[in-house]
Length: 269
Image (cartoon, helix red, strand yellow):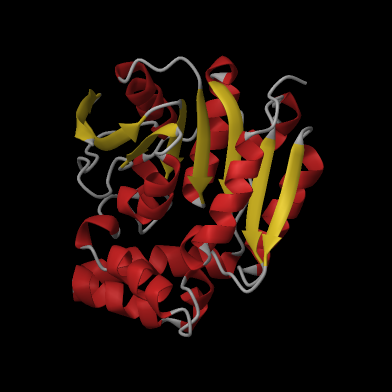
């Protein structure tokens, strides 16, 4: 396994990579870091060159102090590793990063896999937006550790966590969320979103797209997946039964099977 840091404007990103073959870059979502993908990294390293990294402000990567772009950070990572074309697999917010990167640098992406993705330009419901903002207030008022526990036990966020009968998946998710380095380290206003927003540019994408959504995910996220399926030219959607927001954690074998099948598809239109 190779791991290290690459320099980006105003900081550094942590990454790890290993294996050999067609490259896959795994992009985590909010409240997580690169380790959330460890089962996929291990499984796909047998036939692929796999890369996972910590977005700026998460895991081992630096805390942002200035405005930054996740898209440009990803470009620097791919360039630093000497990769020409990659497959992108993004979870939640990481899905939005993957979409924005593909729109900005379409020649660098072979296939796109979106697990319960968000998308820039689609407004969150007021209740969801408030719950997100509230996490930052909780950190300021009560400290990060207490804010994390409040997040884990908040009924609103239960769609995010595996069901209690999936004990190993629940433990893994909670352990990742409980890392203080993954929780509200910086103001979201520092993250610069690509414009024009992706929601108005989806027809430009020509790459094959696999959308995976959990049956038990939040209704807004399920609606987002349906919208993407409608707007993207070469997309297919798989609904994973009995799963919430992180289906690759809840049912890794099923997720990995679907990803393997998709990676075998032709990339030419």
